[in-house]
Length: 266
Length: 273
Image 1 (cartoon, rainbow over the protein chains, first blue to last red):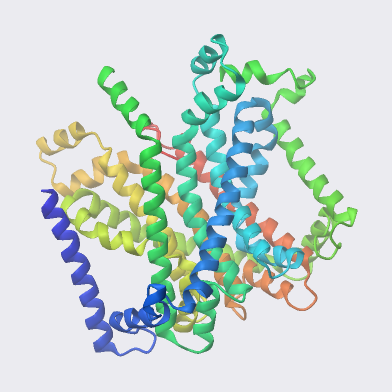
Image 2 (image 1 turned 135 degrees about the vertical axis):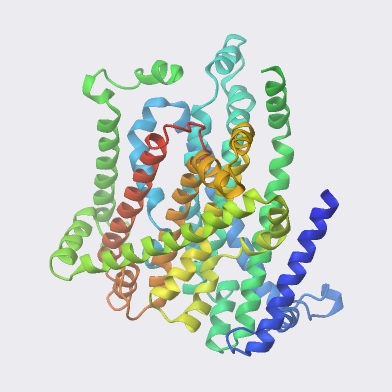
């Protein structure tokens, strides 16, 4: 059964890529290069360097490294602020009432709209890009953390308190673990959002990064290179999401175990 | 809720009015606007770069009353609703199909997993070359980004349908399609609505970004921001336009949340948020 599904997946993918190749060969549209050409350009752009550098070209350090640094940096800043502020807000019930509507408004603001303001204040710099990404992706983390911290069972916290567990250990031993499934859900939404904002912030103001590479390719009217960047961004998104899922799987193992136990008992 | 009640009062004086959530929310918003005013006037950054709240509101008034900002808002909202509608019209049926035929679902999974993470903003430069800067291009990038949450929530919702209800309908002689439409679809509806809510937020981001990057012609809130950024760099106009975009997003989100909370009396399963 499982094997059959795997096979069906691979066959579908091969058929789709084959159809794409065939369609682009037949149509010969300048805007839709053949997938084989896109792959060839990807290899030339990033994987045709000397063997001493594992075949990586200089473009890798000019395109991919800065982009990844900004993406992960902005996301990490948002995660640290979002989780700590979210736990504080979630544990202090009355405070949430004051900031709740405001947070829902800020989450609804499309972050690219604020890009000009960030550029004017911080200039065309990596700081600006980090700020844009962090500002744009913090809301799902913050709101999910608040939600998770609020839904910690009162008896658990009370039990810890009765046993004189120190506040710090209560935080790391009870509140954070109980909120972590929600926090991870927020982190995952934010990661894909961070990829989007990384590209936008680089399209408008940088000298390096994948967004810049995309703009350069557009300037040179090199359609296949544009497609190459798009495909690479898709691969990056896929890999990052898979890594985060693997981490989540490890960290939340206890959670699934306890859920299974509950459903057995109930 | 127990701890919220317990923690409620120590820090706050016992004014009875302060106990109401909406008043607290209003106070929060007012403090935010006041902070915006204060920061704008303190001179940490120049007043042109980060204008105080009053300047932003004045710019907004000017835009609405004199410069016909209303028509840009209508263009953005119209495109956005169109994009969302197309995403729903493709995503829900596709989700129904994939969710009811397991072999199709698992066969397409790998291909979808490779398509989904492509950030649709990266497609905007290509889409502009192929489709221009108008409605077609905007709808295309919106649909590409917004379809995934709808598709996945539809599939996920179908997995949660009570098998007994389906079997019962089958044993009363209902066909596959009839079961899908009269049993599975209604019971998956709360999940689908959650997907639509996520998709609405994403589509608005993409519409504004497409307008922003598209430049010339075709109008919209993003174009107003684009124009205001060039030349003298009118940040008060940028912030006023952003404020309006945020309000649109907030209204849509609140409305969809209201519907999902009160509109599905038959299925209170508590879809994930």
